[in-house]
Each structure stands twice: as structure tokens, then as C-alpha cells.
Image 1 (cartoon, rainbow, N blue to C red):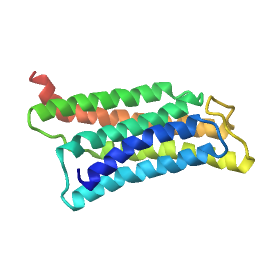
Image 2 (image 1 turned 180 degrees about the vertical axis):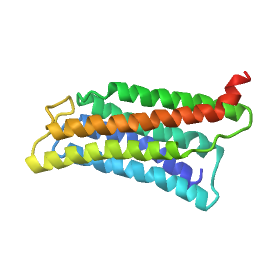
Image 3 (image 1 turned 180 degrees about the horizontal axis):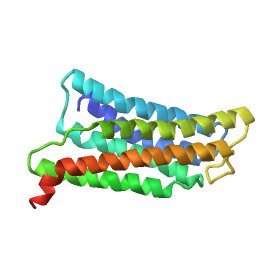
Image 4 (image 1 turned 120 degrees about the vertical axis):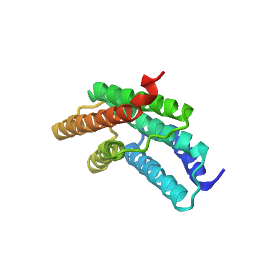
Length: 194
């Protein structure tokens, strides 16, 4: 197993630690959550960069790198839903997109084709990472500033955090859904002929 693939596996390993840091209440647990999240996001960029730079692209990487990304982001979003923020509909739209793209990619691989990443897909990934990352950063800042343990079972967040969460998640959700429609358009010929 080459280095990029090991980094991909490492991202899977980060998921239970991310969930544990967020859901188990201890002093500065949101700070720990944010650090784990940041390490996971950096690993996502690192494995792709190394694989492309040193021509270490493998079938394992093509399959498991996107799965690691999706699992990592889903875990992050589930943590935020658990806080009681009303982002469930947006998360469902994002998950619909991920299943849609996975289906199109599978149909393409059966035909020996690949559907290249598009600008919306790249923007989607960036927005998802920023949306959850900023939320974790705000929670970490709040718990350190006020020296309180912010419960993972929901709390009464300040109004600015509710506004940020709603606006950021909807913008991310719309871009995510548009990127899914673009993948569907690019792969429609594979589905239409079946």
C-alpha cells in the first residue's frame, strides 16, 4: 500500500476519534474536535497531491479516497445535526447527491469510462469542509472564551451561530446539488442506454 492510500485509510481512522471528541463531553472537547477535523481535511488534500505528483494513482485510491471524503464529511454533519441545528433537509440533499454521483460513477466504470471532476464538485468539497470547519471553530472558540463545556446533545446557540449555520449550509447544499446534476448530465448517456 503506497503513501496516498495509507493517508486515505488514516482519514477513515480519524472518523471514530472525531465522533468521540464531539460527543463525549470534557473540557475543550470542541477544540479537540476541530483539531481532528482539520487534520482529516489536510489529509484529504495531501493524499491527492502526493498521488498526482508522484504518479501513485491506484484503483484502491480511486475507489476509497472519495468514500473516505464522504464518510468523513457525513460524520461531521451528523455531529452538527446532533447539536439540534435544523440542517437535516440540507444534509439529505447532500446525501442524495452523493448516492447519485456514486451510481453514475459505477455505471461509468462498468463501461470503462471515467467522468472527470467538474468545477461544481471541487467547489462543493471546499464549501462542505469550510461550513463544518467554521462551525467547529466557533464552538471551540466559545468553549474556551466562556470556559464552559458545550453539550453535544444540543444547546441554545447565540443568534449569529444559528444564522451562520442556516445560510452556510443552504449555500453548500445548493452547490452540492448542482454538482450532482452536472454529474448526472455528464453520465446520462450511460444510464439512458441501459
